[in-house]
Image 1 (cartoon, helix red, strand yellow):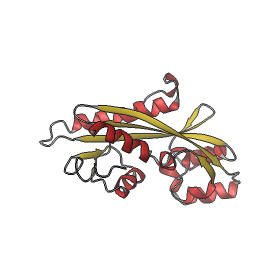
Image 2: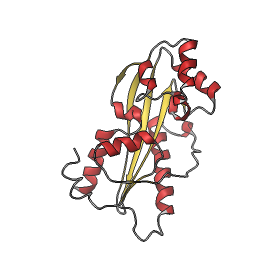
Image 3: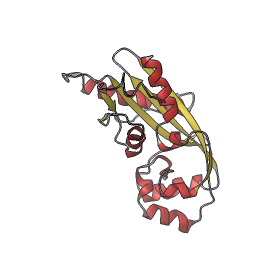
Image 4: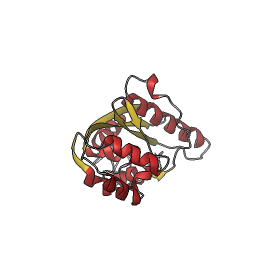
Length: 204
């Protein structure tokens, strides 16, 4: 969808991904975008209860990530032309299930999601020197019934430990997902189609 914008307007621009997530990096690489990875050092400390929904919370967190990176690069001789930031949260019954701090919490997260439908929100912020776009997408995810043996075996792979909700749909965790209703890339961490639409809007 970014063609021919990617090979013309975006060619030669300094594009920054303000995230250390290998999933987000993979998504951008797969569409041929050339970018630098400069993870944000923003300390995520917002209170979810102060937002109307968890999508807005994810957007606010993504904005703070982008803002931190932009300030850090403000003295660079070549300023960023485009900074992309994102934040993904897993939401069930009004509660956010973030990255587990240890294996016990990973077990607790997966046990809570077992046999239920939850919602994944990914908030995205795109910033140029003169413009800003904010949005979020949501996808419903249906997780299969998981017994203790399955949960512990999955945790033993170490995959859950750096992922919101303690699972990764693009890896071993895909086997515990029965179905989704919405955009797969939102669950992976970066809603690709919407991202492309907003980038096109900025440069049209």
